[in-house]
Length: 592
Image 1: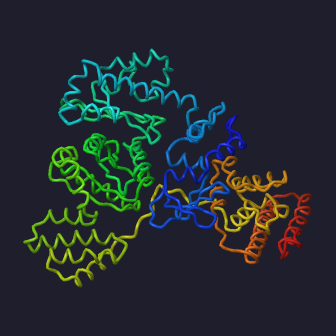
Image 2 (image 1 turned 135 degrees about the horizontal axis):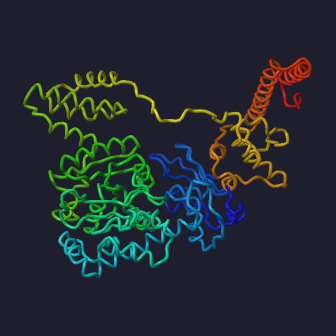
Image 3 (image 1 turned 180 degrees about the vertical axis):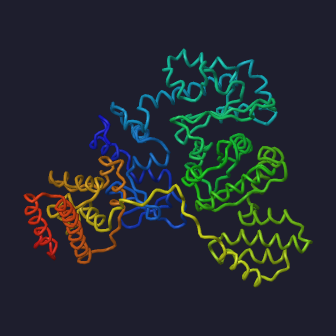
């Protein structure tokens, strides 16, 4: 993919101005080992660093989850932004002027100008809302309500809170700025044929991404909502905002990570919970968009920490939401603890009644997710009753059977033994039986079929060519040996460099083949062989690729032979015989 102006040469110069180790070090801690830097991967949860950054060749690769890319790809993925926005971010970071260009692939994203205007619309709306709350007489009730909740002017300014006075003032304000009507509709701040304020009459919370840009808004009714009116309402999904993937407070998390860091993130249900904890000085928090927590949001959290403390409302709905979130987080590999707030208490109540010291005490005492859920199971039953103890054990053992690590399961058996009076030995035997009875996991029905995978031989050859291994001579390799266009594109990238007498630069492959599925696999491949063993495997791989190509030609010629007329058949027979003779050769020298 190449937009006019963003040529590979220009992109390479931009990357030189933004050293990959320096940029990635702003997000994760890297330690140098040999000629590479290693750290914990920000794209999946891990305890042992497997994320490698190759400074000389300008790319990263994770040996745990197999992601690869250059510094632009890293910014695009870590910040959850488009390629163009990642380029713009690096330009801003290094003081480079971004050239003019035309929009990217049709249907994939808005043009640069459209996205910038959308961000500008949202920034203007945020300013309008904020000024309303700070100074307009019509916002007095909203100010009084926030003050009653301990949200002072300093907190209002910190989080950029605002107020929507009515349905018409925001549209009038935005139209005076001459924004295109189609982008006003696309921005999510206006709704309906009249294009009225979608969050009219609500306290406004701007949703800000990790780059400090407003992407959406949340609105809360002042006080108790009238019957039939939702207390909270979010912007609709837009090109800038996906509520199932977005987390609130990432801008503060990013600042906190750079300045002092944090060992864990407190996950709450909504943005007002974040603000409530923030007003007492608890800043390492994040929230979803008031809807059910999703796998996509969990993956966003993985960029910031492996350790999550859930702090949901203490009512039944909060407990059920916590259990759903625990399942998602544990499946994504997080270490999860849970603050069990008393009945009917929410994070705002906890902040007011307990203060920072009390919240920190709850954090220190927060049980792991298994202990928390065992506690919930215990509360359901009267353990003085033999029959209810049996029910308690059945549910508790079912929970423990989901733990893969047998030694971790055993840690909880003494707890069950104390509660039930059943010996640990009997419980262990029953647990093993319960675990064995679990039905086999069903495959994810929506998972794509595995097809068109690159072969080990092709991977080894392309990697050897890309990294200019001493035994890899591209003049002895044929383009047609590679099955897919993606593989051939990698071959062409190397051939282009060699044709001009240059050594291919692996890190530059992302400038030429940014959308390639094969390029990251090739660049991140570790052959695991050296010297004569590597050369021998390389030659064997070439022979295998050549033979597979010849077999495909033979199959094609044979199929054509079946339907050929008498005049064509002799020629096809000659071709098949020649191909079969090639196939019997045992070395490259005999074949070619």
